Image 1 (cartoon, rainbow, N blue to C red):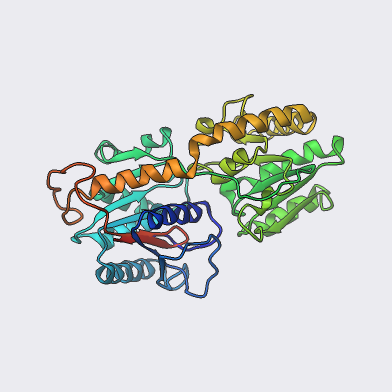
Image 2 (cartoon, helix red, strand yellow; image 1 turned 90 degrees about the vertical axis):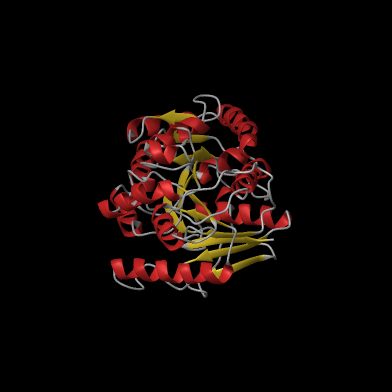
Length: 388
C-alpha cells in the first residue's frame, strides 16, 4: 500500500519491486489512496494492476478520512484476497494494519523514513507502536533505524536497503550543484540555499538547482531573493522524467534534517555524481565513506556544508575520484540484489498462514509454498498485491 503514485522515493521502490515480482511470474496489484486521474510518475510494467481508491489528503476531515481509508482498503482486500500485503510509510502502515485485522494474509510493513522526526500527532505514534507487533515482518532500511522499534517489534524486523541505480541516460555534467526532493522542511533546502550563498561569490560559474515541488516553495523563493541569488539559484519543479535531474549535475547535495534511506543519494552515487551530505539520521553514514565515496558533514551545520561544497567545486580531480568510488560502492544496492531480498522475505512468510493479529502457526520454511497473491500499499497513498 502507498499513499499515491507520484515522484517520491518510496513510489520508485514499489515500482521496482512490483516489476521484479511480475517478471518472476507473480500477479501484483498496487493499491493507492490517490485519484485514478492523478499522474503516475514511475512506470509499472504490463501485468501490474493499479487500484486507486480516490481518498487523497483532504478528501474528508482527519479522523473521518482515516476511517474511510480503513474501510475502503478492507473492501479492496476482501475483493483481491491476497496472500501477502506490503505497506509503505508510517500512516499508511497504520491504516493497513487496521484494515488487515482478522484477515488471512501475511502482512509486511515498511518504514521508509524516521517516524520520530516526522510531523505527526502522538496518536499516530501510539497506534503504530500498538499495531506493529501484529505485522508478520517489519522492513527497515538501515541498521541504525532498528533502534526506533520496541523489543516486541524488533523481533519481527529485518533490514532491506533501497534498490538504487542510475537511469540509463546520457549525462553531460555541468557546473551545477543539485538538490532533489519534496520542497518541505525535512529536506533542508533552506540550509542548502544558505550554504550556496557562502560559496557563490567565489564561484561565479557554478549555479544551484533544487528539483521538486512542495509547500515550502514560496519560502524558498523568498530566501533566494533575499540573498540576491535569483540569477544563480532556481527551483525548476519536478524533472520531466525519472532521474532527469542527473543530466547536468556536477555536484549533488543532500541537506535533509532527517531521512529514512535517501533514494536520491543512491541515484547520484550510481551515476557517479560526487556528493556533499548531512550525516542526518538515518542512512547517509551507512551509504557514504567520508572522503572516499562522498563528503559527510554534521547534520544542520551550514558552514561545514558550504566547506564541503567548496571542496568539490574547487577541484575537478576530487570530483572525478569521489564520483568513481561512489559509483563502484553503489553496486551493493543494485535492484536485482535488493528485490531478491524482498522475494526471499515474501517466500519465507508464505510458509505460514493465519489472520493478522492472531497467533502464527509454526512456519514450514522459506520455500514451503509458492507466492500466490501479493497486494502492496504504495506510499503516495498506495498498496501492492500479488497473485500467482
